[in-house]
Amino acid sequence: MILKNLLILGLALMLAACGHGFEGEYTEQVGSSVEFLDAFAKVTGTDGKIIVIGPDYIDSNGIRTQYKDIFVRDSGSERYLVLKKDDGSEEAWKIVDDDTLVQGGGLVSITLKRIKKQD
Image (cartoon, rainbow, N blue to C red; front, side, top):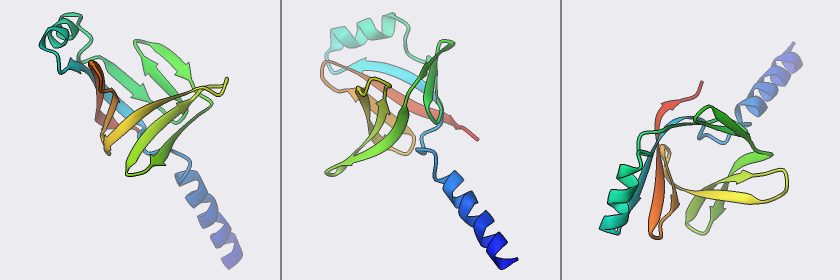
């Protein structure tokens, strides 16, 4: 009986550790440190778009993009959410905090703010 309970507990812990921790609904905000580009980004209407990040996919505008793996990578003092495609290529989003991801940072950056955690 004890072995059965330990096995169930171990399986539950393994399943809980399967996610990357950033599953949920996000709102997208596009911005720039250059005033003209920032105004242009706001006019294009991309702000406020809802993005859903799942365990191995991203939904945007009703289009699902499947990834081979989504995981967190530590690089020095920075953390990144890495989206790995089937062909081995990767896209990385900088993790600002548990609810904020940023891509870019040059002239234009995209910020994803989590508005709802996925169950």
